[in-house]
Length: 252
Image 1: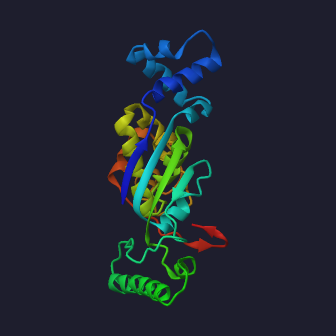
Image 2: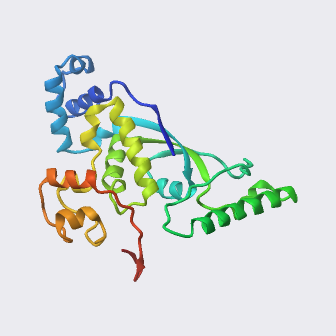
Image 3: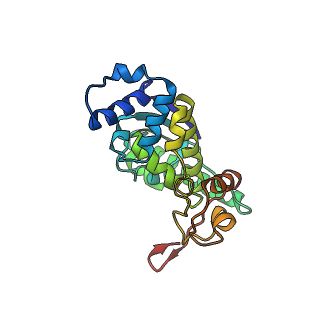
């Protein structure tokens, strides 16, 4: 996995504050806000965190994400307010592609053999004259792919609340952690916008998912209000990847 922040707005903070300030009152320019002292900007930013989120949409980030599985990108593009450009399998011959290997206590050799067998079948079909767009049908979903994705800060906030959660598949957790770190590296102030749900709200986002180590450690298996500091400490120290189970038409 490799995540690169391709594009961002250097003055995103001031733009956010300006759009919010303009909505409430006139007479203040973007140049005025850029000249505000850091303390005043921080005060107004704290207010924005607890009010209507529409102004958050003016900050925009574009990422290039490489060496991830198509199983991941199938989930990733379900965020409908993002913009995406992904490597094509219809026209690109990917016979030299590698694939993501999940952590396994056993059967890893069996898994890798199965993956390679599907790629060997793909190559055989192409060499037999089958068009690439048809041969791709035998490729595994864990084959490596690349994708460029753009999101506004409001969407990233929503993704952080859900996709940093331990209920999320491990690869998705890792990708979003890297995206979050890339944003914070250029905009340290954005850290407050990009927190997992339980840190933001002091309650569990998915209380039915009882295998979450944070829920077990902090909430005692139920969705109880608790201090954000304790949740943050538990979340940062405990890592977990969910293995969901389908039950009565629901994912538990």
